[in-house]
Length: 113
Length: 113
Image 1 (tube, chains in turn cyan, red):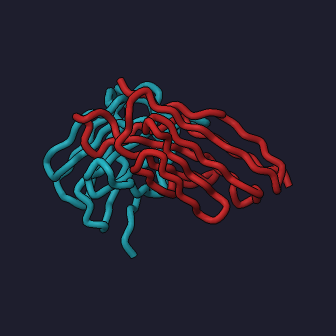
Image 2 (tube, rainbow over the protein chains, first blue to last red):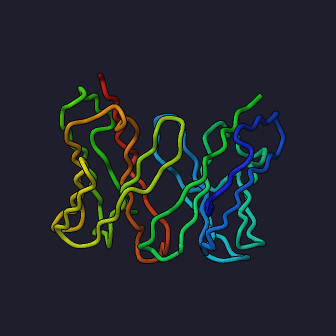
């Protein structure tokens, strides 16, 4: 089945630690996105990538970093500079055209130890 | 920048009742998309509206795009417990935003049996 796989489902971070969230898609989509969702809130865009080896900052990129070395993969690193990382992180992909819907993974819940 | 606003933020509904949630954009949209997120789950694409005044139905759900393409509504008839979740509307950003979507904060729907 085609889809988006995020791992791990739950992640705990210690103070001063960087952690990386995985996102893999086999939908052959060009575009990929990372969102942060806080309880009772909407989706805020962290980073997005239109094509391999290219990515752009979203609305809340500070304290995060990404890479796009393969079309299928778009990992997100939450760095120690992100002082409030506890949230639900969602990865999405789309065909890339501005009229195309986005397909989401199951998400990763990140908490601070 | 562009803003997408949804009202109400919360909607408590008795099973069998109807309700409507509204989405308003500060700018004209080329299309509007609706997503549903079940509790603990991820957003799932429901529908896309493109034409001015367009109305689409999915069983008990009726989606409408305003004539000015700046607002949209979702009407659910005879609400069931399966309708529980948060409903998001989303529109493309401004012309330079390519593939990105601006999500509203969502309407969280609670159904009382």
